[in-house]
Length: 387
Image 1 (spheres, rainbow, N blue to C red):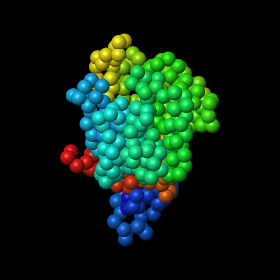
Image 2: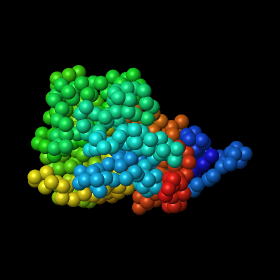
Image 3: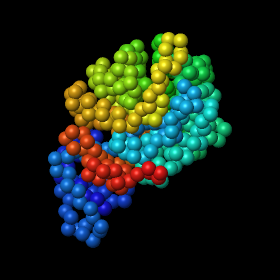
Image 4: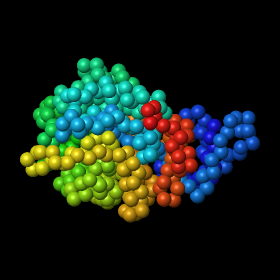
């Protein structure tokens, strides 16, 4: 058992100074004061949280956990992510995806990496499929993947409005999403379709056409990279009033002239009337960040990091003057609700004990994943195999 004393608790809503008791993998008690006398019979670890903030662990909904890239040839493929990289970014839950290369890479690799991360101590799920349509799958049918495989919660990332897209017709896109939706219903999952948004004009138009010509709701689509350029960002302010928007955090340092800084994007989305619950942020970590010239030739390639989310949340609070509870929802409770991740995203009794203790400079002092200390007093004490 672990008892955190005298800490400012953000659930992510601020609920005041409390003691927080963790037993097994869950929060079992959150009270202004918890007496330790009755707990002496247990192996109790007490952590002093005075002057510190306790927040939910970050849920990163878009990470290339098994590697990605390859747009520049075989030598430009990224490798599997390491546990310590995720922990450094405050990530206690991660959603893996394949990405551009559904041709030489396999979603079965993503599934095994999901299982590996679970064994190493954090929570992990995945999207089946890739950029391409028809999407690759594990069972031979992506809907069966979603309905039957516990770790698979949706489909993606399917590329739209991008020169690397398969450019599905409106009817094809409708069938794709309806199939995933029904599979999600059967499996008790979100069955959501994660959409890679490219640089083409009117980028949301394929989604809008699909919704207008079917019974699908906007909330069955989960478009990402919505801050990748000024044009999509402008359209996203309108689209986000109906559907979800995911901001990409790790690419901004590499393309500052093109992309909207993620912390600024959060503030402007909120100010434009996009419901706070429609906004999330993912790192796109371990994915390649290609830069193409006007002829479509690759001219540079970078790789994202999970720590980008935490940096941008810090900037959203300190520079953009957003309340911490508003900014933190973007990487915790909003993601949990959209992806139907039960017992995730909140510091609440009977929820999974995924949490971060932050100091006044937004540094991670301690991190808990499923009730276990993974970072203690700024040191990573749990690393993955081969690190």
